[in-house]
Image (cartoon, rainbow, N blue to C red; front, side, top):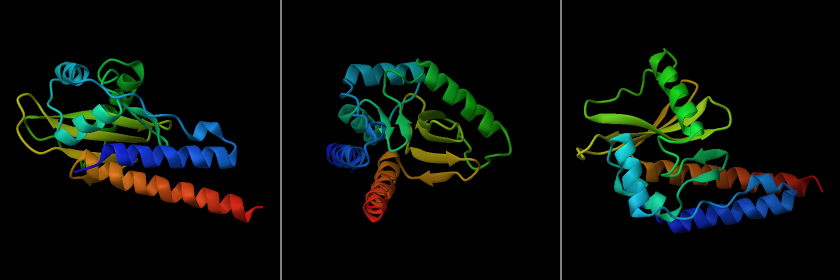
Length: 180
C-alpha cells in the first residue's frame, strides 16, 4: 500500500528545495488539491472503467499533478475531458496501433487509459482498468518509444518513479555544489 501523502509531500518538498537552490522555479509546482469521491466516480463514468484502490487513493491525495518530476499526471476532471488528455490519448492509440509497441495487449474486459504524459509525446503513463463492473487486477505501463515497462499497479510505478526523480534531483544539487 502506498502512503500517498508521504510520497507526494516528500517529492514536492524536494522539488521545491532543488528549484530554490538552482533558481529555477519551474522545477516545482504544487500537486492539485484532493479530488472528491464524486469527482472520481464521474471520471470512472466518463471512461466506463473502475479505478483500482491505489489510483483512487492517489486522486484523493492529489487530483493530478503537473510536475511529478517531468510527468503531468492527469486529475479526475481532466480524464476524458481536457484537450491535453485527448491529445495524449490519441497519440497513445496511434503508438499502440503501430509496431512501436506490441507489448501492451488489452485483455477483454479492460480499457487502456492514459493517466500521465511528459511534454515530449514519446512518453506516457497508461493504466489498464477493468470496464464496469470491476473484474480484476490492474496494470500500469510506462511507455517510452517502444521501451514499455509494466508495473503491477499505479502505486508501484509511482514509488519507483518518485525514487528515480529524487535521485536525479539530488544529483542536480550535487552537481550544482561541485560547480561552485
